[in-house]
Length: 182
Image (cartoon, rainbow, N blue to C red; front, side, top):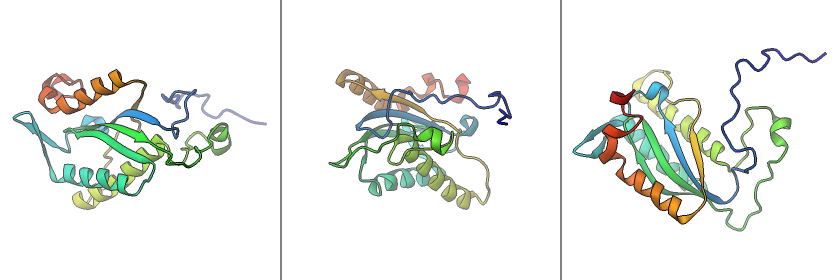
């Protein structure tokens, strides 16, 4: 007899669009936040982001992520005191798209399709967390469990998001992730 142990009380449904294959070619706007929006990566001075030692680790692992993934490109990014904004592009480079339909039910709720945005984010977070925890000699959480994503559908949207990312340090005190606004 199959039982539903927690009766879906403790599992939050995925925020990912069920109609979209996140390993498909496309442009994606993502935001990855620190656990409890903790200020870890540096500070804004004169409208410029000044990376802390932990912020420098994050940037190093971020850039390394794109050198080891042939299908993934970073179009724009900014590391802020407690989050990262980025525009990512997946290009299959002549390869067949990764077949993901129906796999989640076969692989479990935590399944991440290979070469997908969620697979990238999980790998990046893991690598950065390992280096950060070595640096601070602890095993404290670094990242919020989930991340925000948005499928970019046209040039106007791309341009608007790109400007938002570029201008984020100068608009820090207006940002909803600014600690003074929490």
